[in-house]
Image (cartoon, rainbow, N blue to C red; front, side, top):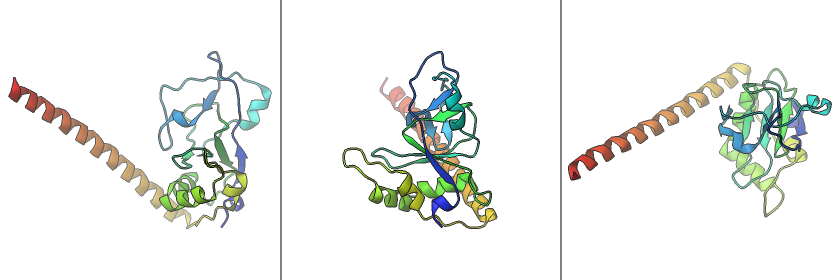
Length: 184
């Protein structure tokens, strides 16, 4: 099934930042992990009536549309709101209720899907995807229960990786302390 058959696709917006702003303006660097916004992120754009239609809703999926490191998708969890996506993103909203936003993000982030998007991207200096490329992207949609299991397993795998990395850091620190004590 094509992505355009299960969701509407829009572009992020281009706004000027302002330290007195009260609206979060999400850029690629604001995500410290998939679906996880930097907790220190501050609002940075001023409110205006034209922005309201661009406010992100919980369950929207935002996809990086430019860059050399792939076209990473994030499921917006509404931790920081109101928020809008910057123009570096494409936004999937009004997602069919039979499809989990987290599943769409997982599917888009698969290496095979990323390879497909890279192959269809435009531009040599800075690869980019557009609405048409995303609209035509074929996505396999299993039943909701299977989607939930996939999302849960993916979440557990990411948690495991985080724990393993932390354990490795602690072992490195421990080894450095032991070795330093040996030479003193």
